[in-house]
Image (cartoon, rainbow, N blue to C red; front, side):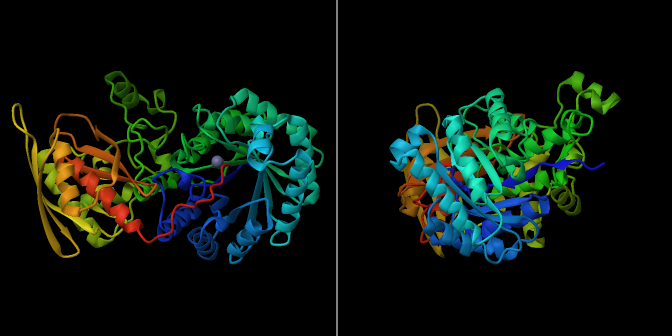
Length: 521
Ligand SMILES: [Zn+2]
């Protein structure tokens, strides 16, 4: 059985990282890139080198240290951008420059202030110049889905002539529907002169929840590369989720595979999906919604009595995929206070965490404390414990003690004891409610007052003794930081989330700002 491959182009590190609050440090990006290599993605878009020294360095290090995938760097259609991209990817064994320019009337007129003929000329020159650095050049007509089709055909034919090898068709604003996107790809495939020599690529945003459906419609009509991100990370509503497009192609082999009219598959090792998803969630602080397809905590949990009965008799009655396929062993396993250190460590490993001995010990201590309060500890609880305990950056502020007094007829009051670089700070404050009082006390103890943009709390698993996970989003100097905290006590979870966000903010100080030049692709 041979068949064709659909190439997976991961842009978690470039497009995904552009979502506010998802910024990663260079070492975190390297960790993600290595895991993407293990996952088996064909291309990693490592960054937008011209946008900042940190972006350049992150791209260069991925090119130097990550084996396997082609490493791509993004560049606008000008010499300065392309030169930066070309230099950053020098160490890679397989390198690609991805250059782009807007082609919709609205973008050409208002953003570029250029005539269509000038835009074609710039695109051609950019591709020619990129070819002096590598033979692998991708071109994207930005906002393709709102561009005029005859113009798209003209510019694509021109860049093919100039040496482009991959043609990416971005739905930059997440506007089109699957039927329309499929038609557009089919039309370009049949009408653009020379396109048979090139790979057609999809790049779909999820503003209407269509990113995955649009990408698959593109593949159905001839696209052979999908640009996507882990967990669908990305600006606004995000990009097409890698795990969803991959599992759709795999699960529906009767449609995409040799049972269908074509014979398509991807190079992804699906058993690494869950591990990769958890890693990206942990490093960015972005929570995965429990009902998220493929990687959500409930995606493989069957709780309704009828379903469970059906599954016990024959798994395929309600399961279209097995949890093992994405790297989970067993649908669900319940741990409790009798679970020993070894059993706990084993479960962490099965769930995809690579922890050091000390980290296992630290997480296990927390597990024991939680198992004491909560009889059954589920996989989602274990994931929450690890996210909470194993920090991915230095903890400048540590919450040692929190006491909150509140109730009907009393003024909510909080007292905190915190440590910061060896110093102990104590503060007492009151507020509109217990969480508000706790946050005010932390603000006083840390002497930091970022704007609180968002606060939410959810139960990690069911039951009144459930673990609560709080998420906060704070903003300072136009940068956003997300913090998470977990506890069986929701006030404590809320306080920890706030301290986590503050620590992320402090860790980011002195690091370069989020690229001021954004690639709206
Ligand atoms: Zn994009």
